[in-house]
Structures are given as structure tokens and as C-alpha cells.
Amino acid sequence: MTQIELLGTINEKSSLTDIQEYIEKAVDMRGFTNQPIQDTMLLLLEEVGELAKAIRKTETSLSVDVDKPQSYSTVENEAADVFFVLAAVCNKFNINLFKALVEKEKANCTRNWALSLRAKSDIS
Image 1 (tube, rainbow, N blue to C red):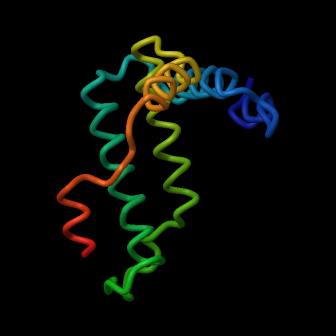
Image 2 (cartoon, one colour):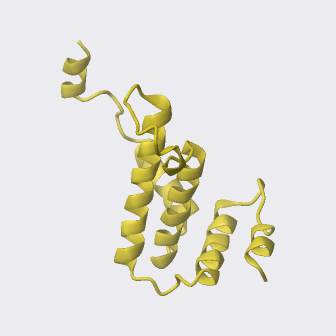
């Protein structure tokens, strides 16, 4: 199976578990299955940085190097990269991302989400 054929196994109706399985197979096809977790984590941090840069260039008034437009990707592309590598990290730890999300959200539903005292003073 080629990578493009593998990509054809998922669609908008695919579950998060299906997507995680796709990512596990794609990582294997690309030769990164045995990559140490530290290397995968560094890649995740790099991708998060690239996402931050893409947001900065499109959503803020901060300046960017206009001579290097090719080095700036879209927010959508970078978000996809972050998701892919995060799922790869979860796969290395045998974490079902859907189940982990549901369990964490159950805990979050019991939390009080009021602004912290410091944040309230910053607003006023």
C-alpha cells in the first residue's frame, strides 16, 4: 500500500481512533516507528513553534521577514502537523486519544473556570 492509498482509508467521518491508526501506519511507512520518544517530542515542540509563527504572521500586528515568505506556512498546515505528531506521541505510549480526551473532559467539567485573581486584576 502506498501512502496515498493509506490516506484514502480515512475521511471526514473517520473516528479519532481511526485517524490515530492511520497516523501509526503512516509513521511506520515513513520509517519513524523506532524513533526515540525524545526525538518525537522535540519534533512536536518544533511543530508547535511553527504553528505559533503561522498565527503570528496572520493574526497579529507583529512584523515578519517579508523576504522569506516561503518559510511561513498556513495556520491550517501547521495545526495539522501538530495534530499528527501529537497523535504519534500518544501512539508511542499506547494512549487512545479519544478515551483520554473524554476522561480529561469529565474532570474538566467539574472545575470552576473563573478567571484567576491575577487575570481579573490585569483586565481592570
